[in-house]
Image (tube, rainbow, N blue to C red; front, side, top):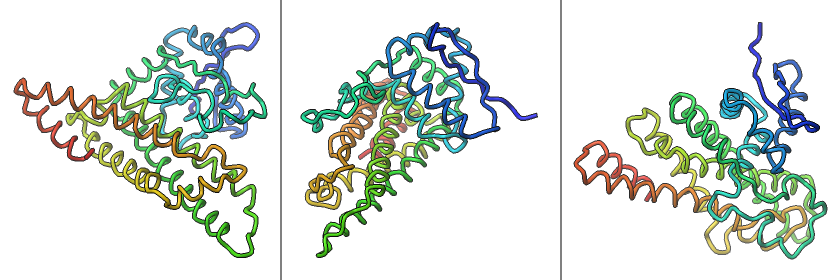
Length: 300
């Protein structure tokens, strides 16, 4: 008998939870259910309904959301976690991207255009789960880092093709589908960075506590990916800069701001935590001192 994964979704009419069993029967049904939950967490009223679910069931729901991304439609799962965090992250209180404020959205009622309504309660459940279950924390973070590496690499490959097409003498038009996929990979990269920021803020010991077997490896991987993003995005008149300045229809969301503030949020939280660890190390704890020095070296 196949194991059933339980997900709690509030009733749209009564705000009471409906118990939905997600099995491996039809992947389309799973996708639809994830999309439904993603919509629920975008609106304050429906999010509060989710928070009124009994605690045991809320924790079970969060545990399912923190399963490795390779085993699920991970883009929707990541989107749900991002909505639970949006409004708490560094420079992450906006409804629309700053460079798009002068343009009118096609549909202001879209879930993605709703005001931030973070859930401190569900964030607390996430922090508790990742703190207690070290194996789950390592699996979850490795899957997020894997997907970030894939999404950002795909994005860079696509903007290289777009730039080459734009520079051809015949000025061929870029396929709109390619532009859409490119923008999607960029948005996924930003969202994955925000989930990493959320994790670093709520459970910094996942990366900085050397008593955890996976901490050093996770911090090294995180530093490598952040370095890769910064190298690609910050250089003046580089590939990313040139494509952004083309202002192609379909790439409106591709800009320096969303990805740089997400990276900055991660670095700021790590540095703040390292300052606290360094202060603690002066109490004479050898382990803390080593942890701080190695962590600082890798971040720099």
